[in-house]
Image (cartoon, rainbow, N blue to C red; front, side):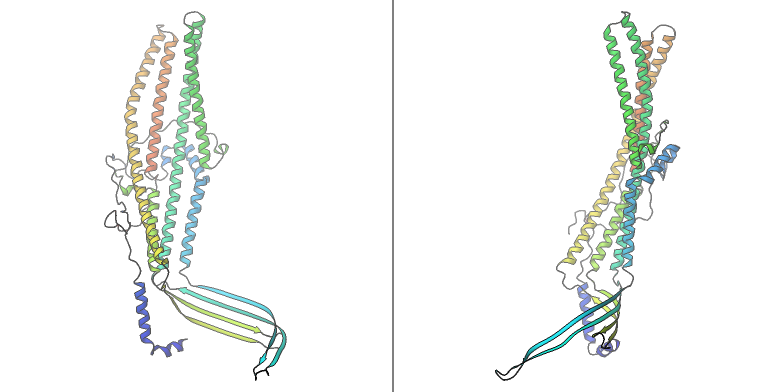
Length: 505
């Protein structure tokens, strides 16, 4: 092959130049890169946020509550959650896709091994040309034969990837893998938030249930006193009906709280992917005080802690590389090829005849799309549309994050304002009970008045506890909105936006 090229170089040197010029001209038909039709957001101002500690929330943020029981439940959920298993499987699949794309950059060799056993029976019949009416017929029948043949060969190919098309495919696969990794973190942070929030809701239900049982006990004592007075003719029988209705209402609240606590236990077991028995018995502990302090900056630098935003950024990166790959599909593919083969045939078994053929070939292969029927343009426009969609999803994730954080802050402030009034009501009711206890000790009032004051104080205790539970839940929701301790430092840069948000194609 080398000698053939040497012999033909001079007379066809001009043709080689013409071919190169044609290749460059055809490659020049590749469409230019169009910026995304949406403007990616580079910042999200959230006005009015108070400043305090930096770096909040931290990884494994739930451990700051110092609750070993909570740590056990979270660890159990992280090990057995079906959602985590699915996210982990998607991430592993994305990593294998990266390995597949990288493997395309390496040379490959394919082997062929083939053997056949054949049978032939040849019969030839025809007419020998001659004068009109004097044609002679003939018939040849050499007989049948059996034959064996075998071939062994190898084909080596190596795509040189001169334009980096396959490297872009690798980069796109890496972007998708990083997005899957961030999605796995998003599933983990959501799972942690749901477990902790459900756990503390169970603790709140247990605390409220203790108050409800105490109130029902006081109501039962009140009812007994009223029944004695009615039997003695001191009170109207309707007073007993009112006491019965009050006791029934409190016992109904007690049953509702027991059911809510059981539902929380079942939900915790479901989040952990275990049965309620495997979850084990939980011990009631006091609710922790919610942390209402916030980081000093809640702009995009902090929002990048959210794994869903990180995943959206990596999808943009993958889509950009897909566009580069689609553009370079217009360029010629240059590959090196080498072929080696050996053929051996026994055309007539038993005759001793054998035919051997050995061949080898090494050279370059150039393939250039000349007419694709619009396929390349469609692939490019599809990749461009995917980039526009990825940017829009990123913008949506950022706006949603900003809204969730702003809503969390407003909720905490509202509940904090309510806490002041609830505390005042509780203190006033506690003072009334103390006065009732003093008058009771002096014999100025009977036990009914003191029991009424005690039940009113239970109502204030329950209201205070409900508000504390709401504030803790809002605090946990804000932790989740701020990323739940997720943090990365190697996010890719955003693509250059179009001249205007409504840029057209």
